[in-house]
Image 1 (spheres, rainbow, N blue to C red):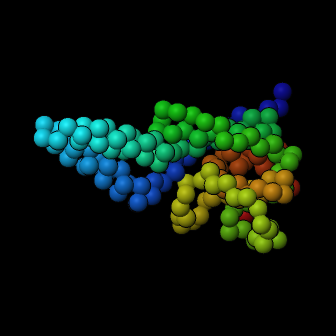
Image 2 (cartoon, helix red, strand yellow):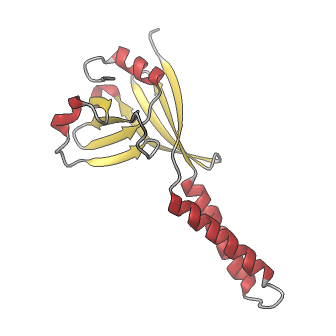
Image 3 (cartoon, rainbow, N blue to C red):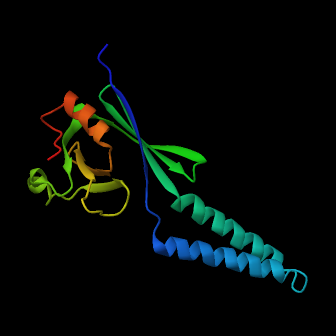
Length: 164
């Protein structure tokens, strides 16, 4: 049995506009709550503002879980630590290349018009630890894997996965 199993959980950075919008909706809900004794329609507006704040929280508090098992990388999206959704399953034998985003090995792939799927932390840090994976010629997947995940995947397919 030569199977490897690695899990990696990555939290995506919440944008400043999403944080501001969520605080605005919460303040709006509180103001409508205080106005309920005076204006009866404010109860429904309070419910709408509170529901909107919950939905903004749900869709901006994201984590991505990478699961590697038996030459297959599975990506799940965890929303607000309460809901999970599978967003992709990628087989290593169908992958063209995987390397750090700023690697010179991706130079020949830069001018391709492909569909980009971002499952990374969502921001560029110093040093940038995000990876780009080109999959079946039509997709570019951005990931933020752990060094352990890269090591295991590189042991399986060293000609396609680079960590320079």
